[in-house]
Length: 94
Image (tube, rainbow, N blue to C red; front, side, top):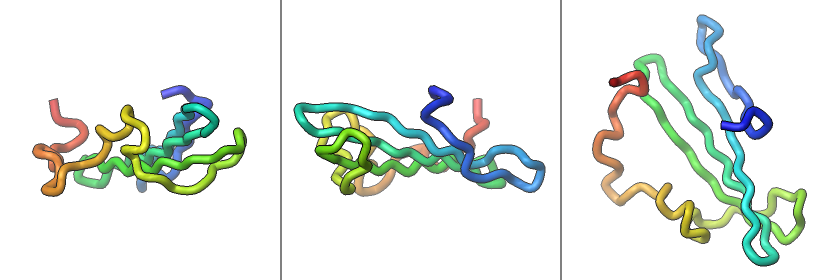
């Protein structure tokens, strides 16, 4: 993750980063897209990913939330109706 596109969002009781926010920017035609992702590890070591995609016709504006599958490369971020298999795997698992 590029340090310029990430920010710690939360720390645990031992001052370890347990939630981080990242951004990725894509231009498609005349539309500027921003993918925001939050990665959070809970006290048991389970990782949760949250993704939101925004679209704007103005380069430096976040714009409005749009479906992830608006861009093919982000469509893979949409979980199937029943969720991902193995979603309950701790982040520190081998």
